[in-house]
Length: 81
Image (cartoon, rainbow, N blue to C red):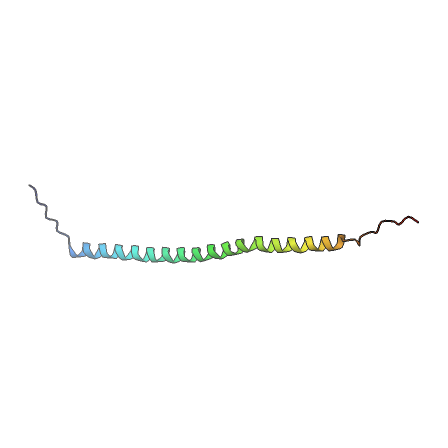
């Protein structure tokens, strides 16, 4: 059976802690960036979801205009004398 004793100096512990803190800062920045991008994607998705509704409304309006313009009063059949 072998037992290994590892001695780590105080400066090495401080360096490890500094590295961990650096990675915490990097992770926090990454999380902030992800939140920002998530908000932007949600806003774009909302805009995309609204487009079909607006197009449908415009289409309905155009169809109604065409139908109204093409309506001709009914022609009465010619009466024979």
